[in-house]
Amino acid sequence: MRRVSDLEIPMIAAAYSEDYEIGRVRTSAGRTITEADIVLHAGQTGDFYPHHMDREWCATQPFKQRIAHGTLVFAVAVGLTAAEINPFAMSYGYDRLRFLGPVFIGDTITARVEITEKRVHRKPGHGVVVERLAATNQRGETVLVCDHLLLVTLRGEGGGA
Image 1 (cartoon, rainbow, N blue to C red):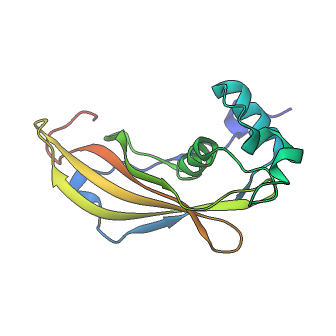
Image 2: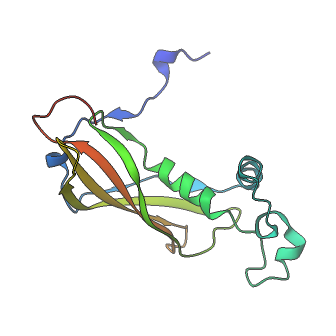
């Protein structure tokens, strides 16, 4: 039996807004999308469209097979980026979310994040760091892109975001 102290936890990486470098890139390990993922996501969201659930109907459609929900791919891609915990930052939201290609059962997606922008936020003592998230499948095709906005404490302001 594993003890709590034996479990891996995400790395704590304290960084202020000024510490983020434009151009810095992080790439995740892969994650294969399964039929169970799709069924569970449909149950959680109520999205039972035939594009995701009906194999026979999908066989008559252009993709010829079921496709994963875009919101499932988004959630998995975001989760793949969650390897670091910054006590001075919090998610401020996502902009420009686009689903660029289908993800099928058995596809493996990888997430790549690049810091693309930094700016001061109207909330005193905080900045916004923008990281572009791109998810690709095992063939190197980009299937999703979005901008993740982080609200990050400025150096010398103390406390968390």
